Image (cartoon, rainbow, N blue to C red):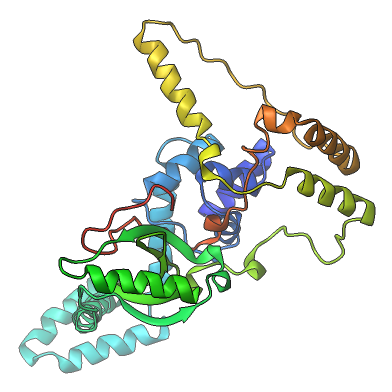
Length: 359
């Protein structure tokens, strides 16, 4: 059975949605959809980080999905490299013609034992291995060479860069003896109100980055290229043009936003989960017995009265209850990073660069 069919069947049996599985596996819903519709091959069997999460969510035996993935990928490979059956005989005749006369009898004996397709597939695979090796050697010649330079190509307005393209942010510090040019660049960029779009090479990868002035330093944010970001057109389950909010609902929502509007101060946002874990560890270190409580499961499929919810939220916001309870601070923000096709491990952007706490 193919992985897509198995996952679809288990979702139906468990009465779960693709979005639930995507959240459990920590991938996008679009990725799960492409997997189920065979637009994307299953991940490599070695990707246990994905298969374990999916298998656990679907309550499947450990390792079953990885085994299915291996069989499916082998089947796809054989289908792609197997020559059409009518050519098998021609291929064997060609092999005999190219063989030395003293070897032809031995080769004919091998042909008689081997069924059509197996030997030809082996030859094709060997040829593919040779092509890959040659291609790898040729591609290595094109690998960008790492340099110590960060080359700024354009200066643009910061507001023109959509945050969806940002990856990781680091500080840039000057080399020894470069304090004056460094300070000059910081001040000039601050006065111009511009950020520099640059490219640099780290190891064998070329990065796109935005260099922007801070108070006294320069910060560099690595960026995703355009083809590394999923387009909104590729997302599923988005509201269509007919899903238009009513004017009354819209005005109340705008009121709620206005009531909760404030100046951004990153210091007031705390990692509640981290603080709770640290407090729990302290209590445990003091010898206190910790009894874990199962969280109450929220009812699924509940229909929400939008107007009623907005009225309650607005009333709570006006009275300050939302801020006191911390609901505003923990409200989910747009997950720009979930739209990225790739996720790279953080690398240092320059010599002596320090990674910022916020990315």
